[in-house]
Length: 231
Image 1: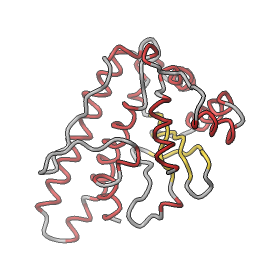
Image 2 (image 1 turned 60 degrees about the vertical axis):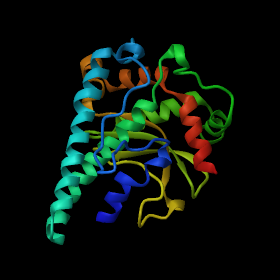
Image 3 (image 1 turned 135 degrees about the vertical axis):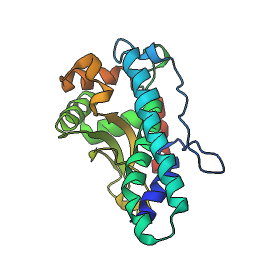
């Protein structure tokens, strides 16, 4: 189990087209955004983005570094087992948020624009239309009890796009140690449904947040992930 958590944190992030930023000493750092905090307005406020990035994501980075440092100093299997939860939670938080920032783009930089290509073809094939995908994914994600993530993932077994949810900060990654690639989903689009992602702007009305976020989804990045997953 521990091998799975460590692999998810360190070696399989490439499946999502990003890598954890770390030095040779495995010190993870907060990734920079490709846009200003207020660039996603009015769909996601600058205040939310700044707090989400500099406070919440930074907390996962700090927690991951602390857990890895503690692991390096432990001498018994029992002590290392105790660290698995912290590695999974903070490592997943770092992985998911690093993907999430790339998942978004301002409307003036192509955000929200699904153009003709492999991704649109796959969406039309597997869901009937883009509107049907949004309707189904929004409903599935809104139904998450508590905190978690809604995903559009590529299933290597069925060769189709599928909607998947994960609890808390559990990542959606392909090729984890002990998990055959053919049974895993490659993350194409992820939606953070933790309250810190929307509450300041949308209060408790999750459907409004889920409807708005599609206006700033970076479909070019999502298509790159799909092409990589199908190779």
